[in-house]
Amino acid sequence: MNSFGRFFRINIFGESHGESVGISIDGCPAGLSLKVDDFLADIERRKGGTQKGTTPRQESDLPIFKSGIFNDTTTGAPITILFENNNTRSGDYQKQRSVPRPGHADFVAQKKFGGFEDYRGSGHFSGRLTVALVAAGVIAKKLLAHAASINVAATILEIGGEKDIEAGLQKAIEAKDSIGGIVECRVNGLPVGLGEPFFNSAESLLSHAVFAIPAVRGVEFGTGFAAAKMFGVEHNDAIADMSGKTITNHAGGIVGGITNGNELVFRIAIKPTSSTPKTQHTLNWETGEMEDFSVKGRHDLCIALRVPVVLEAVTAFVLCDLMMAEQKIKRIL
Image 1 (tube, rainbow, N blue to C red):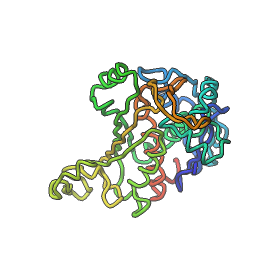
Image 2 (cartoon, rainbow, N blue to C red; image 1 turned 90 degrees about the vertical axis):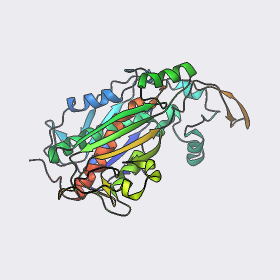
Image 3 (tube, one colour; image 1 turned 180 degrees about the horizontal axis):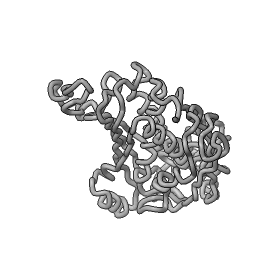
Image 4 (tube, rainbow, N blue to C red; image 1 turned 180 degrees about the vertical axis):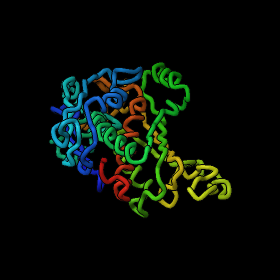
């Protein structure tokens, strides 16, 4: 449910307007230097309020180490990191409780948990919890770089169909609505052999983790859906040498569910933020009737702007787990 991984195993917890959100990580080897400063750059990239089109809600998001780190070094014990929630406005959600917000988990959460769920700011369903994923990613990226100089980097390709990000945001501003985007991730330095067909193939595990990021609507590797329009001889990647290097990379670095040593390339589609400022017509579950409704509170115009660092994080901890399965990350020397 809230856990992922076999050897580098994470467990996420907390709610958007609860006391804190956090992550527990089991399997990180002892001896890895880890300080608060290691987390600041990626946490800053994820924050709202620091860039146009993101929510004005701001939290300090300084990681609080509760276990597994001693004298700025991992001990080999499970690592627990907390992030406090100090800038909340829960009253915004109490007022709209009778109307489950379209595109949000309000309706299904109420049905599944019988109304006992924490609905403030979407509770445990909130994108707020991605700060904990980013923390796990900081550790995983550091392990990958130490073990094999593996580099994970994600970038925004387009917003609202526009490659000019500002133009895409302007479309949303003019429409007074939210908007989606596409984010690409590239990983260099991966060895041949990561992944276990069928159900633990590299794409399966990456896709599983990627869809844990709120707002993800699709994923494609390499050429992706464009492959459906290609001929086989055009799509196949010719192997150039004994290292596995290929002339083209339509497969995106994974063949048969196993990494082939080439650059890992995949993209994800991010939906428009569900909390749009536009008036919507939807159900009031107290009256049983549909009515006009507008979402209150502080929200992102384009959530895709904050996704790249989260995508890097989930990619890194999946690859870290796969590297450990192959005993390519054993200990820190």
